[in-house]
Length: 423
Image (spheres, rainbow, N blue to C red):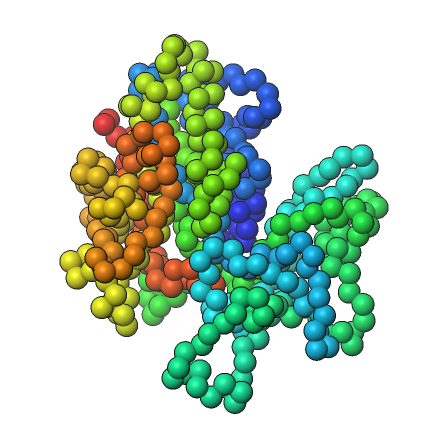
């Protein structure tokens, strides 16, 4: 999480770990050739990635074993025409990305990170950028000017109240694109503000993730939803014992927090495209490879789950109250907001038993709306069997969230069992 303030950085860190483990990159614009034992990865749009270990058996006879998670988190995104000046301050315009708990972004030491598109000679180049110092802040209004805030509630307008402060006007002129050009300029390169053609930037809290609690039993961190699941699935893939028969892998998608409908989102063609091409490139492939493979495949949709909040216990379903530190949560919803069915639950319980882990269960209160995940999207789009799971957490969609430290190893162990199970 500390290495991944944005989806693009999360993919970059994933690539680093994959290549250290011997994975090689496949280019979507080139012809693919894979053979049993190959470890490969594919990147789309810089913010989604798939990693696969090719099995000895053709996918249509052994299927795929896949885990999916998402690289994005709710945050503040910089607008294209970012600079503005108000009341003696340089400010930077932001959009709200996803279901942000707005008040949690107040009075935080924020920086910017993301990717910048620059003109480098005659070429267009995408470069990661990360400012590691506190450079932004969205100050709250003093209680003296809003006496009823603690009794009547805080109401924030996303357009007018969430605009970060960047610098004092009295300090002189400020060119935001020049700031970006300086940050991404390479040694000896002549790069001016006019060479910055576009950018995708996120605000993030500069305070690192940390262990918390008297005994270190908590994780306090930004972006637990859902980088914790990205970490667990990748760790399980890299650490799983050999299972040469089946092709297994992870898909980490962008844009889940805004509906997944994009070229690199779970509701786009990325998953199908990669699986189709792997089926076709496998040396033992045959006719109707993909639909036959999907019928034998299983997909674990891994996204964080709601732990019981002791101060708001009435918001939870009385018979389904996951605890921090209590292990992975199987998420169910009769209206298909989660894709878990009886078979999916039973299989995940079997993998938990193999890992000596006891699962928990979550169902939203019947009188509350239920969130959703990439699970139903995947099940409906490809017809694969899917189960929705995740580790329990509190403060979901806050600028900083919390989870149980003990749950990290438990989820990795169950995912590892899934990758190596016989059925």
